Amino acid sequence: MSAAQKRSGAVRKSKKGPSVGTGGYGRKSLEGKGPTPKAEDRPYHKAFKNKELAERSAAKRGNTKGGSAPRGRSTGGRSKNSEELVTGRNSVVESLRAGIPAKALYVAIRIEVDDRVRESLKIAAERGIPVLEASKPELDRMTDEAIHQGLVLQIPPYNYADALETVKATISKFKKGHIKNAPLFVALDGITDPRNLGAIIRSASAFSAHAVIVPERRSVGLTASAWKTSAGAAVRVPVTRAPNLTATLKSMKEAGVFVIGLDGEGDVSLPELGLATEPLCIVVGSEGKGLSRLVRENCDSIVSIPINSGMESLNASMAVGITLYEVSRKRSG
Image 1: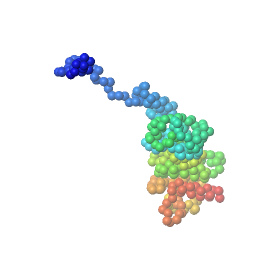
Image 2: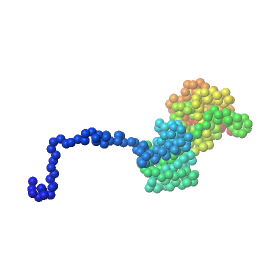
Image 3: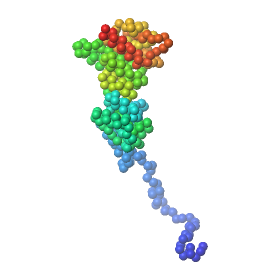
């Protein structure tokens, strides 16, 4: 070691041997404060404020269980009454054009504006839909990482009327002369594709049907996709729910409604249908399984649509559209 180093004190003496402990007095300071709380449980964190806002929003909507704000796209494991989200510029602008009811339009901060964004903002302003700015991470969380392109449309849950109550009210109006045409309903048995539902609603509106009936279980509901496919027709034709489709069909028959099921191997050809001018309910099943056994047993007649032998079957919505047209033609004739 040089004399200069000794004078400057640059070299420290190293400790040798065991060091003196604290005798246990420092144990508490070594224990720490436990695991770090979640972000949403820390009052000073942004996630905590977002959680509080979501809970207040849920309380206002009458959700007694509370919970977080609606998340995810139009499909998923959320409850039947949860709100839906339409994501992506094309989907959002098409939904707004179709007149789908909307609760809010979320727009990314510093979004690159194109014609679709411009039109979405214009329609939202005309319809009085709140426009809310959100950061991209917030939109990512809201949509479960869906491709949103900076535009998200929030749709409130559809308010389904009771199927049987709607049927009875329609029959009463017909008997009193408040509606001209005999009651006409379309019931879905096992339809799970929202686009099929949307197309059926559109046909029902075109041919003056009074309601569309969907079962509560194992059936599609009025999702954002169904709204869009219906081109806004769901505003004009109510979509109703039946707790049990078979029981509802039985009650409809007791109320004077004839029930016909659509099937490729029906005993009556559609052009020969003699019940067209009567109060009528048309039941359609899924393309794969067709009508369920109990529903088929409760139909007054099984009707087939004559098609080319090279074609196995028709799409459910197309079959309903053709049948509604034939019923309308017979009624007008």
